[in-house]
Structure formats: C-alpha cells, structure tokens
Length: 219
Image (cartoon, rainbow, N blue to C red; front, side, top):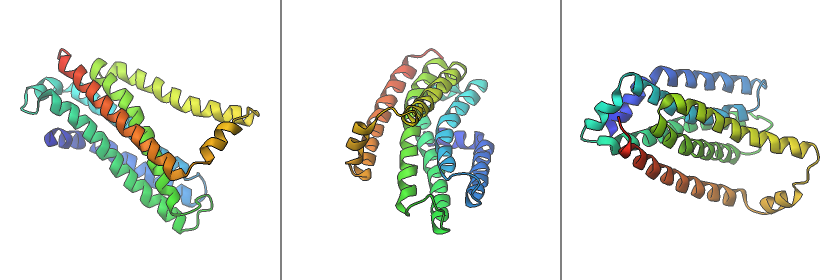
C-alpha cells in the first residue's frame, strides 16, 4: 500500500508544489492585509477535494487500476492508499497553514484573537475536507474520475451554497437566535470534539462503502 501512496505523491508533485506556492502567496497577501486569513484556511478544503480526483484521472489514463488490482495489495490496498493519501495531504496542508496563521497572529494580525484560534479554524477546515472526501471518494470508485468530477463540484457548490444561503438569510433578518443561543452555550472545544467524532465516523463508513464498491467493480 505504501508504494501506491508514493506513486500518487510522485504523480502529483508538481500540482502539490503549485498549491504550496499559492498558499505562500496568499499568506503574504494576508500579512499585507489584502485578504482575510480565512482564505488561507480554505485552501485545505481545495486540496482535500481536488487532489484525490486528479489521482483517479491519472490512474485511468495510465490504466493503473488493473495493474494495481493484480498486485499483492489488491483492491483493498488501492482503497486504503487513496484514503491514506488524502489524510497525508490534509496533514501536510494543515501544518503549512497552521504555521502561516500562527505567524500572522505573532505579527499582530487583528482578526486573529489568540494563538488557539488558528488551531480551531484548521481543525474545522480539516473536518469539512474529510466530510467532502468521504462523499466523493466512493463516487469516484463507483463511476471513475470524469463522472465524479461533475458530482464532486455539485457537492462542493451545494455545501458552500448552503453556507452562503444561511449567511444571506441571517443578513436579511431571519431569526436564528434560538439555534445560535444553543450553540453559543457550548464550549467551542466541545463543538470541535463533536465535529471530529462525526467526521471520523463518516470517514470510516465511507471507507467501508468504497471498499465494497471497488471489490465488486469490473475493471
């Protein structure tokens, strides 16, 4: 399985360098006050959503799936490697983002209240990325990269569209005070822990679904 992960890293190395370069540029712009720091944290979602799709596309072009299924790792190894690769990417992106955000806090960025705030923001973005990946990865194993690309974009637009709709309704005076009061009464760390537990459970379920789909799929 480790060989599959290394293969994905080597195939995507140029794309990953590009993502890191963009994050560094936006970090510099955030230091200059051009962009809010949330733009940098949002890159975690971008990396978690786009990179796995790209690896599937490269695999299909090279007909890698048939070869990989014939190796000792088999189809189970292929599924494990995709999830492990996604987790590894998010870990690296999160570390890079966290360093930038903590540097912004150290430099006195006004909209970062404390050193713990970037930890919370990066953690939430990781959970969002994993939840999106947990939906898209089984779809990719089922339908392949081309169909999944469209479905993944629909999912992403749906998620961010829902958030934007809630923000618009709140701005227009829709009363969310009861929900807001219930949430605000909880500790942010309790909310983060609950989100983490939900994310872990959904990711494990997604892995089981992907494994079942891929073991039955004709290659």
